[in-house]
Picture 1: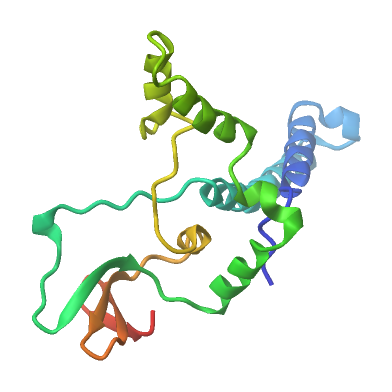
Picture 2: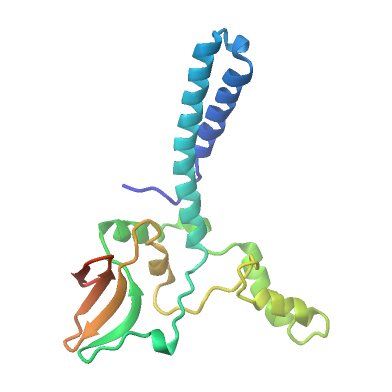
Length: 201
């Protein structure tokens, strides 16, 4: 069972391991260790800190992407064309893991990890309130821009449930979603030498 919508407690052990490794490296006499053992202990602590830091980064990255929807754009000449299927866009194979992640987003205690914060709500209010003011209209335009340098950029207008598009940050996207004449969805995953097809993606 995953538990990614929570405080990243792995950071505590990461900082502790790096602090202990630094102490063993620079001051082995403080731990009453000979230099050889202190060096091995320091490397062990650094390795453990990197391992725990990687776990913390996974939690932080997942929580970051829960508040920033992916922006998917395609030009008209890039749309795949088929005589038997209708192209719907990109997708991924839905598994039990994604069902659990979606269920976790419905809990009241995790809404601060899912919903945009107070600054985001303030920016959405000000971009409407300032759009007619002579000087502040430039600031409103900057708040409204979807540049990667704008931390308060508005989320893209996606249909359906926005949380569904945020759940697939670990597994790779499977490419294109097609609908045939009977309404059955197929998900095609381009690979280096073979194509895999999954039903009901």
